[in-house]
Length: 266
Ligand SMILES: Cc1cc2nc3c(=O)[nH]c(=O)nc-3n(C[C@H](O)[C@H](O)[C@H](O)COP(=O)(O)OP(=O)(O)OC[C@H]3O[C@@H](n4cnc5c(N)ncnc54)[C@H](O)[C@@H]3O)c2cc1C
Image (tube, rainbow, N blue to C red; front, side, top):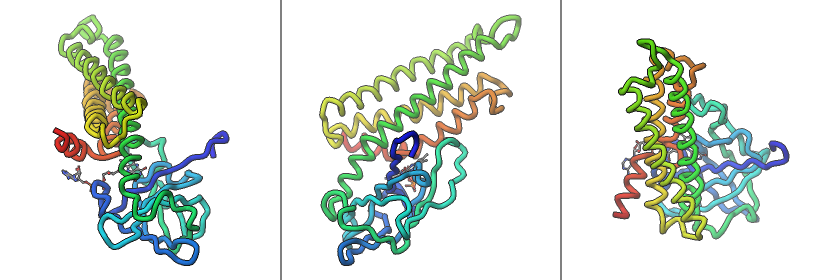
C-alpha cells in the first residue's frame, strides 16, 4: 500500500509470448471449493509491490478457454521474482510471478469460468493501451522540452544552436508529431468516456498506442542528437527518455500488433 492506496497488477504475459494470449500455460484446476494454480508470468508491472494481482489462467483444454482470477499478496504458493533489469522505466518494478500449487477460493474467480479472454483483451485495450499511449506522450513531451531548453542555451558560432535550421526543423517536427499524438490519444480516451465499447474503437486505441510509441522513440532520439555528446550523459536526461521510450514499444501490445489491429479494421 502507498498512502492508503491499494496497488494492483495485471498479469497476462508469460515466457511463451505476450502477443499470443492463447499460448498461456498457467493453469487453474478446480479442487473442492477453489482452484489450484500452477504456472508463471513475466514482465509484470508492479508485480513485486502489488497488494492484489489479477491474472489469467487456462481453465479448459481449448486454446481459448481462459479465466480471470484475483490473488492477494502473501497467499501461499504465490511469489514474485526479482526485479527484472530493464534499461528503461527504472522507477517501475517489473517482475516475474510464480504460482506453485497456489490455492484460491472460488470467489476469487472474476466473471464466468472460461470467459476470461474477452475481458482480458478489453482491459488491455482500455487500460494497457490508452494508458501506455499517455505514458509515451509524457516521454515525448519531456524529451522535447529538454531538447528545446538545451537548444536555446547551447551556443555555437556565437548564437544558440536553436538558430540553426537543422535543429529548428527537428524541434518543429517534434512539435507537430506530439500534437498529433496528443489528439489521437485524447480522442481514443474521449470515445471511451462517451461509453463506447473498446471492441468498437479498437482501431482508434491502436492508432494512439502505435503513434505515441513511435513519436516517443523518434522525439527522444532526436533529443539525444540535439544534445551532441552530452546526449548520452544521464544528467542531460534525453538518454533516459530514449530508454523509457523503448519500453513503450512492447508494453500494452507491440507496434506490429497495433498494425495488425488497425489493418483488421480497414
Ligand atoms: C515496460 C513493460 C511493462 C509490461 N507490463 C506488463 C504487465 O503489467 N502485465 C502483462 O501481462 N504484461 C506486461 N508487459 C508485457 C507486454 O504485454 C509484452 O511484452 C507484449 O505483449 C509483447 O509480448 P512479448 O514481449 O512476449 O513479445 P512477443 O509476443 O514474443 O513478440 C516478439 C515479436 O514478434 C512480433 N509479433 C508477434 N505477433 C505478431 C503478429 N501477429 N504479426 C507481426 N508481428 C508479430 C512482435 O511485434 C515482436 O516484435 C510489459 C512489457 C513491458 C515492456
